[in-house]
Image (cartoon, rainbow, N blue to C red; front, side, top):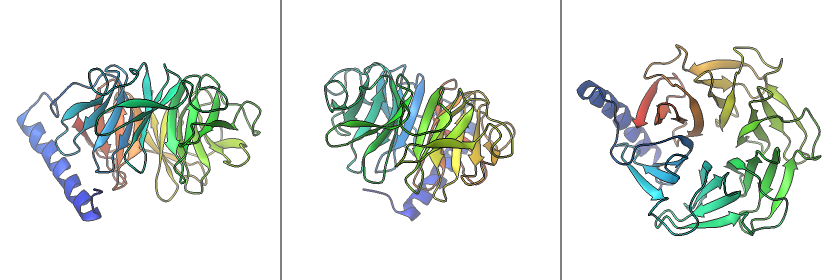
Amino acid sequence: MRKTHGQRRYLSGIIFLAFFVFSACDDSNNIGSGPKLDDPRGVAIEIDGDVVVADRGLLAVVHIDIVTGDRTILSGPGVGTGDPFIDPRGIDVLADGTIIVADSGANTIVMIDPVTGNRSPLSGNGIGDGPPLMEPRDLALEADGNIVVKDRGLETILGVDVVTGDRVIISGQGVGGGPPFETPRGIAVLPDGDLALADVGVVAIFHIDRITGDHSILSGEGVGTGPSFVAPTQIAVEDDGNLLVTDSDLAVVFSVNELTGDRFILSGDGNGSGPDFERAVGCHLDFDGDLLVTDNEVDAVFLVDSDTGNRIIISR
């Protein structure tokens, strides 16, 4: 059952209080019990408010209790049936609670039963028509429940029908005009249905028209003021349309104005208090609008206050 706003605020207070109490009592900062994270990448929120992480080192999806930080393997070695993960990257949760994962090594979008951990292909691996998946690295959900996928091998953005698994090219490979993608990373859906794409090679955030596939620089490469990106990696979109962007090389979270492209560092590099990022990669907004960030050098999940930039580690 989805938590009410009051319950979520109450839990947020518990999380922050528990962190400071724990830090005062234990210098190890080993927060939460269970298998240690090992190269966590994508992160998402389940419908009950807990956290799921795609972990490349564990070759698993890890469930994290949002209050205690305790970790369990939800799907992976020894848990759930179906083909094993090869390189799990992007992750999200459908409206019915089903977890979806972009497995870059298997060239497949995988569905996971959140109760049993059983895995089955949603698209790829013989499921769905259209251009083949070739290293799908990240995904996001559209308002109609269908999926957009960033595919590294094709250097395109694909749309995937959540029922049939059919795939179409949204942008790239001759669809849509604009400066070419170079090394696309994270993708997100904007409030109007258009898309935002982080590209490490271009060192910019693209805006992609969902209908035409036309793409332009939203921030970076002379668009917008403020500190420059170095390696924009993943994007979360706030309710007002502004973007929160992790930069893995700078180890920060940027806030980016969707209209102007202006940038400022919200968290990291002296902005916000708490333990430092070392390599901020995945990100996802929680139900309160605060930001979950995976760091695959610290091997931890951070919670970042979206107003102050203050950071805590919720599981490590």
